[in-house]
Length: 129
Length: 131
Image (cartoon, rainbow over all chains, first blue to last red; front, side, top):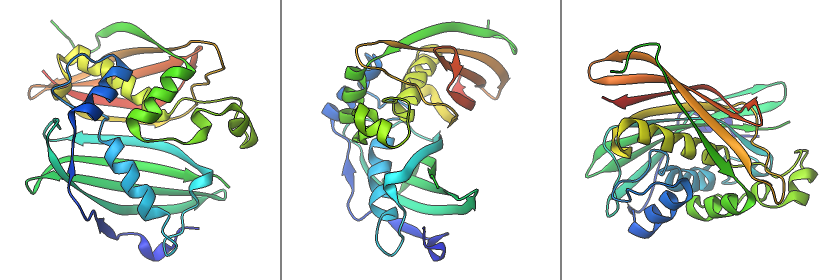
C-alpha cells in the first residue's frame, strides 16, 4: 500500500537529463515519425516514468509496481522538447484513493528547461487488488 | 477548411511483437507483460498486450500528421480502457479517427477514437493542436 503521508509531496529529480538525438530517433522510428528534430508528443514518458517508478517504489512510499497498470495519461506541452534539451523533472503525488481494493494514484511530472516549465504530465496508475 | 463537427480521415497502424520490443527499448518500459506471453498470462491477461503508451504514441503520430508537426500538439490525454492484445506472429490494427470539437484562439480541440480488433481501447481521448 502507498503511504498516505506521501500524498501532496513533490520529489525533485537530482540531476538534469539531456535529451539525446539517438533516443529521439529511436522513439520516432517506432511510430514512423520522420521529423526527428522535435520529440514526439508522448516522448517525455521515457523520462518521467523512470523517475516516478523509482520514487513510488521506495520502501517509505511502498507502491507495489508488480501489480500496476496504467489507468490514464495526460500531457500539457508548453514548449516542444528537442534533442539537446537539458531538462529537470519533479514528480508530485497529487492524489491517492482505494476503490474496490484497487489503489489509484495520480502523479504529476513537471519538466523544466532553464527553469521554465515545458511539459506537465499526469499519470494515473492502478495497483490491482 | 476545418469545421467543428468534421470527421478527420481514419488512419490504421499495425502492431506486432517486434514493434512492442522496439517501443520497450525506445521508452525504457521493459514490463514483461508487453513481451513475454507466459508472464502476461500468469498475471491474468489474455496474452501479451501493447504498452498503453505505445497506443498513445501512435495516436500522437496521428495528431502530429494532422497538425503539421509534433511541435503543434499542445495537449493530449486518454484513459486506457481496454488493452491492445498482440498475439505472437500476428499484426493487429490500431484504427484512429478524430472529430473536431472546438476551434478557438488558434487552437483546434479534437475528440479521438482508437480501436483494435473493433474494441475501443482509449476512453476520453482528447487533444488540442495549434491551428
